[in-house]
Amino acid sequence: MEVLNADGYRSDGRRQFELRSITIDLAQHGAADGTATIVHGLTKVFVSVLGPREAKLRSLTIHDRANVNVEVNVAAFSSGERRKRAKSDKRVLEMASAIKSTFETIIQTNLYPRSQIDIYIQIIEQDGGLLQACINGTTLALICAGIPLVDFACAVTCGVYANSPILDLTTLEENDIPNMTLAMLPKTGSVNLTAMESRLHVDRFGDLFEVALGAGRVIHEEMKLAILAKSRMLVAEMKTIGWGEKDLVD
Amino acid sequence: MRPPSPSIVEKEFLYNSLKESLRIDGREPLEMREPTLSFGPELGWVECSLGKTKVIAQIEAKIVRPPPERPLEGIITIHSEISPTASSEYEFGRTSEEEVTITRMLDKVLRRSDAIDKESLCILANQRVWHLRLTLHFLADAGNMLDCACLAGIVALKHFRRPEVEVIGDEITIYPPSERAPFPLAIHHSPYCFTFAFFSDATIPPVLDPSQLEQRLSAGVTSIALNAQKEICVFQKFGGVPLLPKDLLAIIDIAVAKAQGLHQIVENRLKEDWSSRTVEFR
Image (cartoon, rainbow over all chains, first blue to last red; front, top):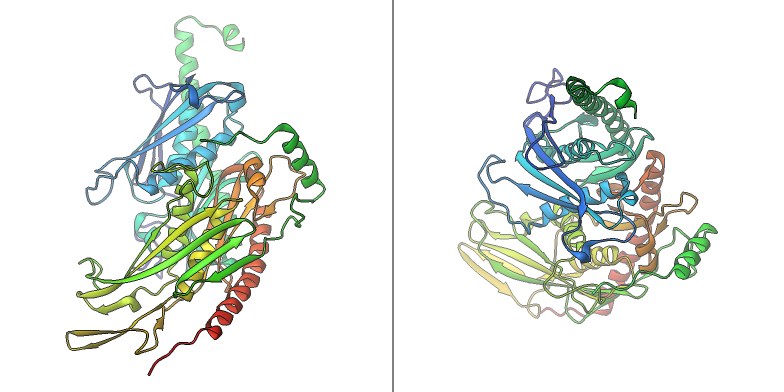
């Protein structure tokens, strides 16, 4: 497959550094404390956050901080061919554990001792950048649930084709070229997660890293806009039921 | 059963000594424990230890019918269950988080990185291929079982030789080692895994090849698998302390140097072992 044609276009008509369109929906769903649906091109992930609440099992409580529990469910219809994944699939378990350890350091867990925060992730459509969508969606859902974070976690997938970096890969591209998922904290510019599974020469790595960090900042802007829009809407609604500016300040 | 978390005294002592770049076992922060490789009587049986961490890797080859979607490729499966033998932390039948990490990492390092040429394991297209089964036995956990298991796995693959096979028409003849010299596997490159532990206190430098206590008290680990040709095969940092990009790039440089050193050690040990074996063929 030709990843980048002679005119510099990719198979879906994007340029090398172009991200897929991002759609964020932060509408409330059911009993969850915070929910987010994030769409990166044809990848769609729904995240709901419950908690902080009392841990279901006493053994899961940690005396000085909250326990973060992540469950990932891949819908059977999410990929090209219908396939039911077992709950014990190692790939899914690994992804859940990666997300858990990413957010354990981002959530201020020490504010909620002896409690539990549940993060349920539903993968509805998948077309590359799965981990990226899960991390971005979880950040948004946690913010909607009002859980204090130290920073956003902005994840992005990037790959290398013929010595040049490419951003936000689709499944076709992911299967073809070496790629990496990276999650960064935009405030400090530090990196919280990197996951690379394919062979790449060390000399190519630096460039890839730089480009991915830049893209992380772009995704951060998108996420911030969505959060601000949601907050504005909430504030407007609070005013309609008689909350004044004074109440909001307190 | 989860072992009790380290005592406050132990914790303070470890942190304070690490701040002065001293490790409890006397190593430098970026020094690996010297790997010890011993080979069994059979080809493809390796016992690898890093300090007191010990893993046995063993390879068996069977001839099977290939799955219809991949008629030209051999099959490699990796079995890595951690039994309570290694440490009381692990339980029978329950997959611990550690086991998921190790299993997936082995899969990425040894299988997905295309270290073994799978097509060379094909005997007769659509009919017969080799099925390699790599089994890892975790005997003792004194920290960093992941690197030890990856090293054991790749060394076992390099040490293993499969019986010579001849195909005439549709007829397959397998020659026992006594008749024809067995054949080494076609290996494209040998990835080695290195694990660094980071601590939440920024004044503590990262340590390579953490011991069990260091691993338990660390605030996250980063694993890099690369080969002597400077190709990164896996670069994995799941959570833990956020690191600045320059720090991450610095540890990659360290790993590059270490991989070349380790490759030399492995090659020398394999050569030594091979020269001490008499392979008879008439």
